[in-house]
Length: 147
Image (cartoon, rainbow, N blue to C red; front, side):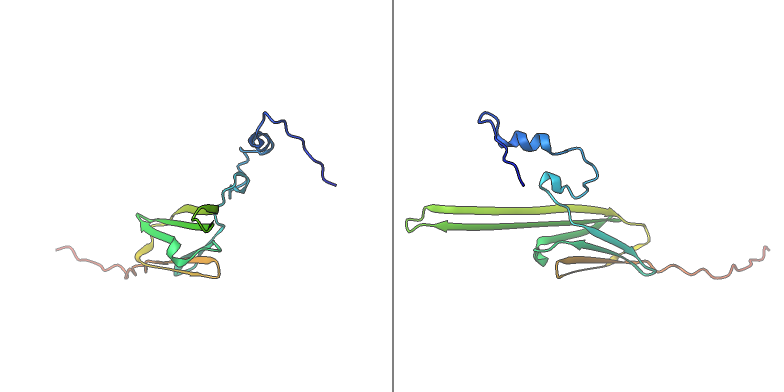
């Protein structure tokens, strides 16, 4: 059974949320308690590449901006949505807008191939694949005669 909470008219509802939420809970890494979210990320290393997977449903390919600079992979996304209803005179009956954005950065090892990065977005999952540099094979040491 739920209880009703009576609010005093001189205290806005903001104060109820402010004192009931733990703003210093650092275990909430997605910041959902503050009304913001960061996408969940899977990082995977194989023999040939690194794979970054992010769960970002509801976005489009055009919403993403991905950059690789000085071994730092930056993934940003921004989405704006507006909905409005007007009467016959052109006055607003209702107007709503929504704005979503996030930014994540990952420091990668130095063994990446900067020019071999691939990104794809399907079924709400963004996948960024960064190939590793092929290791330079060293031959057996060659003896040099001193003359």
